[in-house]
Length: 152
Image (cartoon, rainbow, N blue to C red; front, side, top):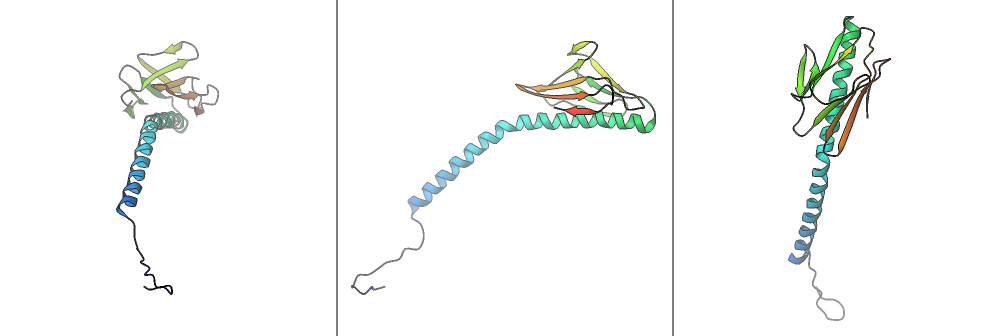
């Protein structure tokens, strides 16, 4: 294309190879950093999901006791790394997660099979289950009067 002063103007549509390489390098750095940050959050997210699942099992035990009119029992086997509702199934704790129980009467329990009974009126025992993985801690508490389950 010729402009009025006689010069030829050339139009380049597109990017140079250098520009493309710089953009790809920046994208690689951003993706690498985001993967690093997300990988650090995964174990804590799994621990919180496990806490929610344990709280749901406790709530289900309470609901079963109220609807059946019979005492139902949740158990936590710290030696085998399992928990669940007696007679209805169990779930294994993931590797690297430890479980302990704070009993209002017997202090801290770190081993053996611990049972939390729920009465037909929904009352629980007032225990706190503590899940730990590294420095992360999730607490699941049972209110002794109402039997409500609280996740902290």
